[in-house]
Length: 500
Image 1 (tube, rainbow, N blue to C red):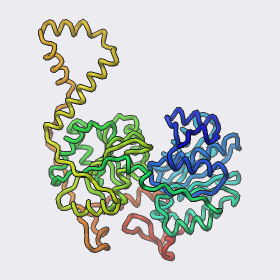
Image 2 (cartoon, rainbow, N blue to C red):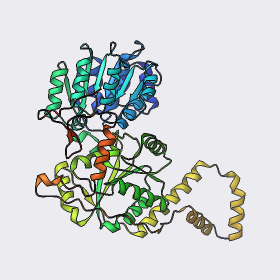
Image 3 (tube, rainbow, N blue to C red):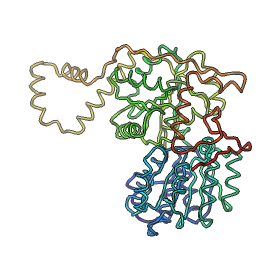
Image 4 (cartoon, rainbow, N blue to C red):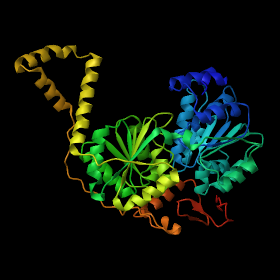
């Protein structure tokens, strides 16, 4: 891999990357940045967690530095969460320049966005529906546009944004650079590239170069009513720095978060029913490590890009391999290692085997942890805290008291043991009862694999409202089984109308 100095980037960008702790490029950055700097259109096929935001953000900023105070770059993303996170990362890379990225998405006050646009940001990161709204209002002008990026294009296709994207690209200046990033390349995405891109260079990062290879994958076979107690034991054993636990439904997320707090863990939940202000507050607390466990549905976790997640727990088994890969990809990012542990009930073992076959990766069985292992884990944490305090050597004010305590007790080992007991978080036995969820059973009939959502129906409704509110006007379509928008147009290209 190359260092960022070798790309010939602006010094302010290299300085920011060094400040962010990035020394060497990831595989996708290594191939994408030089080609993009040369002005080529580019298709990047890669999973999340491979560093693709920086792969397009770095050359985008490099091209804009010193340019006009006008919109020169546009990044389209499928969800508002991803729009916010992409804008944040671009602004971190541009922190020593005058380049600024503004996130724009549905659900946010449009007048507030119009006011922010008047400050002339050079980069807009937006969801397609709200971007089109601003185009119609003439509050976004693209005369100076140099580059457009389609991020997670396959996800935008699944959500029914393909016609919006075509309309947006058709109204952009023809003399522009176009970058497309997608984990998969369905036919509709290939057709989009053929129509709107000029001889694009293709960069494909194989799965073995993505985050999955850095993740230790394990499962515990346990009955539904034992899950929560076993999960708490694992938290005590692992002592994760930051952990995300996935629940299948909104109800499950709320009950899990409440139960964890009753047991003394700092946890908060996030799902499709939360308003944007609440989401932002929860995610900010998690990033700041004010809370140690984030409980989430698949819907709410789409697009989350939070560094430093050490553990992912699948409290409920996901419905398919794609969701599984997406979930565990929240850890083991940017070359770091991570642990992903899945709870499987006996009736769900066939479903787990199907996920293993699809991902071509064996998930190792882990025995159910015992209470004594949980206590040992917390004792180990207490010892590490004590050793860290000794190494920091900032306890001089306590020495005299300690000496007197040892003299009074006559046994230094007893004093240390008592101190460790005070530092050790002993297992909490507060009763917690969760509403039982039906198992995720593998069906022989392919059609029926997705037909039973086992209590998910409410969360899929929230999925639709949450991901499309403000980003989709009324049209003549419906949502398919995967939660994507399917309209009444020709097959392969969902038909959606934009109404003023």
